[in-house]
Length: 96
Image 1 (tube, rainbow, N blue to C red):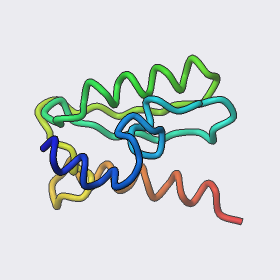
Image 2 (image 1 turned 45 degrees about the horizontal axis):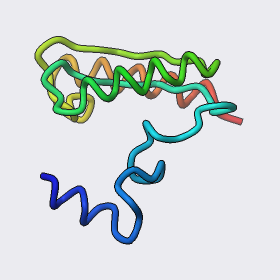
Image 3 (image 1 turned 180 degrees about the horizontal axis):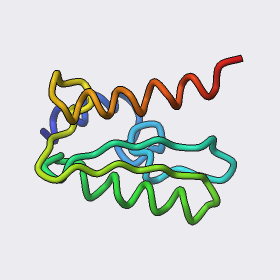
Image 4 (image 1 turned 180 degrees about the vertical axis):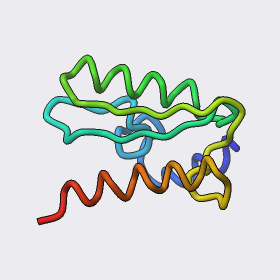
């Protein structure tokens, strides 16, 4: 996994905010809608990211589902359909 992360980073340092958003500046960001499952490998970092954004004044709406993985909103499950509905309502709310 470390090698895959290095490949993703390309020529950037792995701590660059474009590679690792936790190292970025959250001031002035738009509202965030975050989905995570407790079995998501990145769950602890996602919680840290949400907290950092909230401390910077970013409105954060986070949905955590116990026992689910990273991509659960994309799955044809009750939890996935629920997440898709939340996403669709959020997107519709931004329609011009």
